[in-house]
Image (cartoon, rainbow, N blue to C red):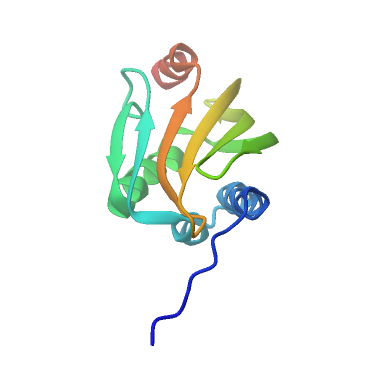
Length: 137
């Protein structure tokens, strides 16, 4: 017998995204991955190693494993999340520290979220020039 799935509301999806960002800030990568579809694609901008497409959970793990190698600290503060049935725009301030210098970036992360509340695609709209400067310092 097949069970019917309940379609999550926009409010449910927002709650899951907040949980995901809180998990990221605590370093709980497994919890972050639980909120991604198996074939999820994250799209980074710019010409650094954080630019490009990161496919599947293995690609996301590869991306996330770079952060502690490059930064002494990297946190994301969520200001607000705007959502509908398919997408959520997460307004954030990221704060990173590298070689004693602090970088702050106001950004938008746009998630395509499926009916189960898992991200299937994610686009990062960030200050890529600042990231490049931080990585070259």
